[in-house]
Amino acid sequence: MKKEQSFEAALKELEETVQRLESGQLALDEAVALFERGQELVQLCAGKLERAELQVNQLLPDADGYREESW
Image (cartoon, rainbow, N blue to C red; front, side, top):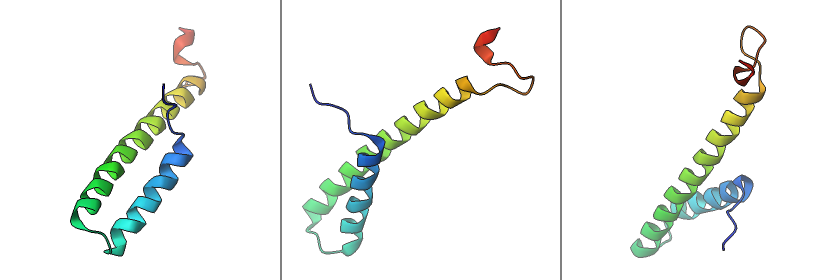
């Protein structure tokens, strides 16, 4: 089973992918494949950020000083 890429590794790969795409030195097929990979990386990073935000929100008290699950 393949281990899921960390947020930091995915973000680094995404940054490198964007740089390569912006260089304008790629063949069309390679550029399309890189764009598709970039889209996958964006979704991976967004999902990880969303999960992290949910975890943080569960740990933070609401305006009344209580966490939601304490009710």
